[in-house]
Length: 334
Length: 304
Image 1 (cartoon, one colour):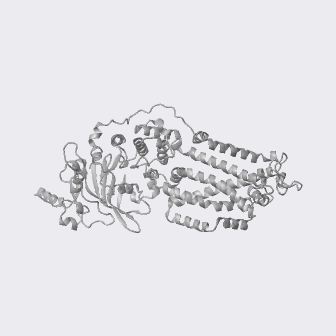
Image 2 (image 1 turned 135 degrees about the horizontal axis):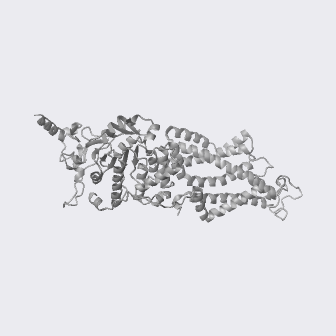
Image 3 (image 1 turned 90 degrees about the vertical axis):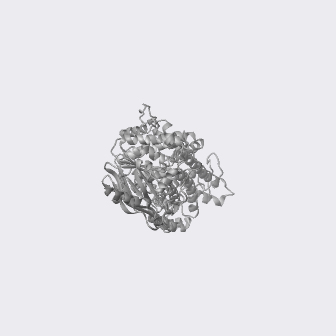
């Protein structure tokens, strides 16, 4: 984790509150993205990945979503303390977001050119019409679409093309941070690969930092520098890609994720999925949230919430590793 | 996944923009091009323009006095060369009354539709988009409005303010804007859940911009169709008011008033009923046809 951080989240807690129940969506997450680096946020559905992204953008559903505590620092600003008006200047200009489903994230009655131009216009109201058009064309050619197609409507584009347009909208203001919320989930595999390569190339060209939300470890391996694994609104393991992919000391949940990837090189009868379901976020267990599904569950896991264990760049939240880490540390001192 | 990525084609990110002459067409031109293709809509437009020209040029065709001053020797005459639509129970020329009556009727109907559409859509959009307390206040006040029957409400307004052009406009607007509030609110409620609205927010757009450029254009089809239907409804509603003696004061020619007067002589002089009805039907259906055409022309999915 070198370089100064562009985004730093400290102990962020977010709940969704309705009259009936309180859903604990984020339970004190810490994240850090260094300038120009890409962090992969991994986890199964409902782990709170999108909630984390929406909290950064301050776009949580107004009526129910609440940030209870925590700080989000972005380029020196504390985002949770900005007014909505100040936040609007940050959104799209400094932090941009690519949404999951390109089919629905474009307005059907506006041409793609107009939609890209809108982002430019919002943040550079003084820019002349010709200059705006020029930037629209550059943005389109950057994502591999002929600029001449700017006067066409979204329904005239294929799914992969639409996602490129959405990405063009996001990068047109050259944001410092790009949040990609499962940008390829709605696309088929070959298009997925193309779009990912394009995102990677754009990121490198523009020097943008990126938060890549995904549940695909393949994408993480290909694109990210650092990884954070989320489970039930917590970051249970984080580190560099090497920490997560090559280290044998993994959180049982991360191990489970790896075990559920089919291998192309070796023959195995069945996949080994993680048994059970994620706990109900409105009624989380007292101890480790993963304990009910964990193969290595001990008595302490049910009784007590684990504390964070850090080894260099690698952080774990698991009782399994607490003792060994302490032993190693004291061993090192002797 | 990892395996596949190695084998796929690299996207052409660093493509040089090709020099292509953009077919720059303004929005209005584009809409007109689409509109022209629709036969029904063109018929509607031709008919409606014809009606408008006739109404505007009425002074050159028959004098206004023919519509207000009767000749008692010529009561309830059937259509003839002299009076092509015949004469009414006061001996007035029906053709002249249809023409001058159209001015009042259509003007009131169009203005009342426009103002109820503007007021109603604005309230509906605000209510649907902001929700919560704002929504409650607007919708509950509307409930109070709607709990009084339209006809009673308009009667009350006209009685209180007096029957003239301006007050009729106010009464009709008040009677019809509630439709729009509910219609636009329901549209906004569904549309503001769309991902592109979320995407626009993520791009830094404010509420006004989102409502005006992302939500309302997508609700346009429904609003336009409702509006064109409303013009016809309001013309008929005017006639109801006239029938009750709350419309434009006689002898001002007005289609509804003509219908009300003709009812008595339905058997003896059916032409008295026929011509104003024809005028209402033709103008209402031509407006409907125009509305249909506009809705289709504004929908980019149908553009080729």
